[in-house]
Amino acid sequence: MTKLLQHIEEMRARLKEVADNEQSLVRALGEALSRLDQQLLRDVRTIATEHEVRREAILGELQNLAAGVGMFRAPLHTPAEPQAYMPANGHKQAIAPGDWRQATSNIEDEYDLDGRFNGRPPSH
Image 1 (cartoon, rainbow, N blue to C red):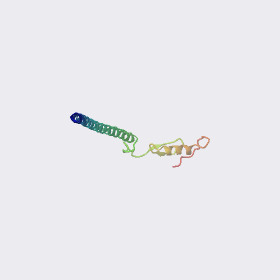
Image 2: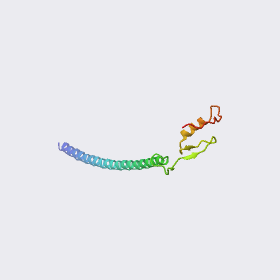
Image 3: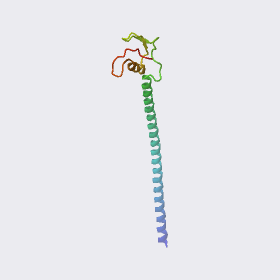
Image 4: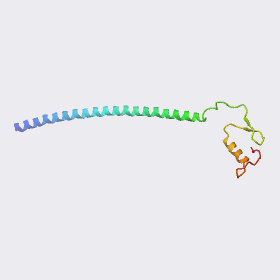
């Protein structure tokens, strides 16, 4: 029976050694996972910050582009009065700068369907 007790004590000591070893491995795994979590969190924050910087740069570029086409800022200069245009038919008309709709309407008024000048002053 003493041999049996001796084997039981050896098994108990060995089991304690394995349990301690397993516990240290689990603790090391927990610490490694914690470090990885912290690194992942830092990486996500870095990526989010970089994305925000890129987003702000793109938004700034879009605002500059919009400002360049005159959507957000006032015209650089406004003429005191419209420029006068004297067509060949002798009628003086005022043309607002950049009024292409009116200009195409004038072309249609001045020429008939065959492309010949009709001699009438353009209607406004």
